[in-house]
Amino acid sequence: MQRIIRIKVDHNDFQKMSLLEQYNSLLMLLKPHLTERTFSILATPKLIDDNQYLGWYTDLQGQPVFLNSITDEVLKKQISEKLQTRISDIELTIKSLQLSDEQQAFVSSWLPRIKSLGNQIYIINGEPVIINTFEDPILPPPVVAPSAIPVKTFWRWWHFLILALLFAGLGYLLYYFYPFNKEKKVEDVPKLTIIPPVLVKKPVPVPEPVPEPVPVARNCIPKEDVIKNDNASKMVMIFDNSSSMTLTLMESKSAIAKYLATDFSMLTQKEADAYEARMTRLPNRLSSSKKVALSTIDKIQQNINIALVTLTSCPVAQTTSFYDYASRGKLKNKINKLNPLEYNSATPLYSGIKQASKMLNGVNRDDYILIISDGEDSCSKSNICSLASKIAAKQPRLKINIVDIAGQHKIDCVAKSTGGKVYIAQNPTEIVNQMNKAVSDLNITKPICE
Image 1 (cartoon, helix red, strand yellow):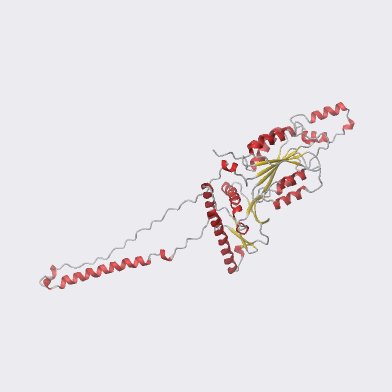
Image 2 (cartoon, helix red, strand yellow; image 1 turned 30 degrees about the horizontal axis):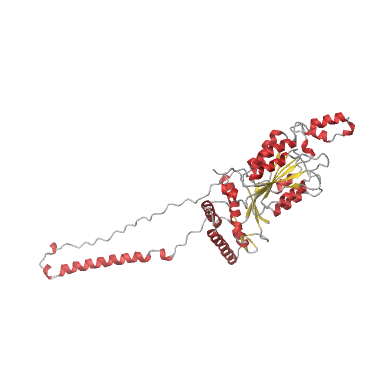
């Protein structure tokens, strides 16, 4: 996918942020039912650059050109006609879909926003692409059919009125000039006073505008979405299970650094054992991370399946299949049993991220990776930042958040490239708070609707 444009994001504009979330849901709903060409008019939005910008992406290849910058009126007309054809295809497809009442109301409320004249239109190789502004829709004025103009009715009404006045005048003349009225005095003859009809223009009632049905962003997941979750988001949890995760959380960073640099050959066995016991005492990085991960899994909404990738030893990370909601107990048992290898323990993080990305879609739907680690890759010399950039380009809707247990900022580029965030946690309280923030930021903690 290529980026067409990026726009500064105002996270305080809650309405637009809600509309952004709704729009992504709309794309997920429509894409399986539209042709590739029809769907191509709808650009895909994605938060980028530490969520400070909204990037708009498309599968079309070529140089994007802003429609309003084109001076060739013939070309502009052709593009506009093509755009209207694509929108009509979308409307026809929507009418043929078997949607629930709620889905139908949701889609119908978005049609005016898709057709809004306020949207930005770009052209890529002769194909129009809509960049939605998430502003109130601006629609073209309705065209009034000629038959609706009451011209004939108006003149027909005057025609009858004139005929009525002529017959009234003729009746008066016959009455006046008829022979039995000759003896009448002029003053006895009543004067005919023709009072012209007073035309009173009745005000045409103007119907009150019907408010546009805007769906309220739901803070819960319908039960049917849990049962039929073929295209629901998925999540992979990458868990560092290397020996460094056994380091205690009760010592400072400087004490930890000193311990890791110690030459144990200079210590007696008793001294070495005591030192190791002190620097790995509970609560340590692993025990606290496992505890928080277990509680975090319970908060993730029920329609999201979760897989586990563990970083235990070189050369590659270990993966599991996806666990649905009913099987989360098995997932938690697997996490609870994690323990570093006594020998050859290492962190194949590059392998873990690469494998996790292959397990997810991240193109047609929002997918997520949550990394819980205390350091960088210790198995591969490959550039993990380059890997993250490639993932972001191929899977623009795959977001990676990181809970950094050691606060070393060694893999921040992974989160930044994919629009995710890094959360530093170096004590038990921080691990709880930062893990909750990392999952909450992914917006995947909605409960089941009552």
